Image (cartoon, rainbow, N blue to C red; front, side, top):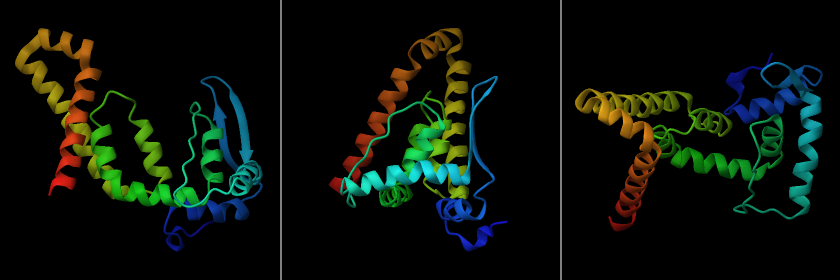
Length: 185
């Protein structure tokens, strides 16, 4: 058993688990009706280390950028774990900007599991994540409920037809306002 009190982040606990539970199941990738992949902690480490070495061989340095573009599958986690030092920079940036990311993303119709997974992977403070999630998701549903109550069926058709556009425009206005505030004051 890993003593989580000894770790400051989920990443730190995972690094210990890779060795402590080498032969235990670490990750199961499944479709709706069948298992596709089952990895032990040792398998996971063996798959992540070559990527980490490749990034080191490519002379990735602090502040370098690396993009991971793929579907929601185990390879994403393996790739991200192999990124090493860059992940620490990502976590630091997410610690600084995570509140805004959660608050803005929570208003959009894009699946919220994206920000949930990213926040967990970035070791974002769980209490703050829950607080900001309640605020942003609650605000989104209260706004929708208000519009439906106030304007009825006509609002429902507009919301269903163009919600993504209105949320995107609102997010752009909020971001521009925040950036303007940071740089002007």
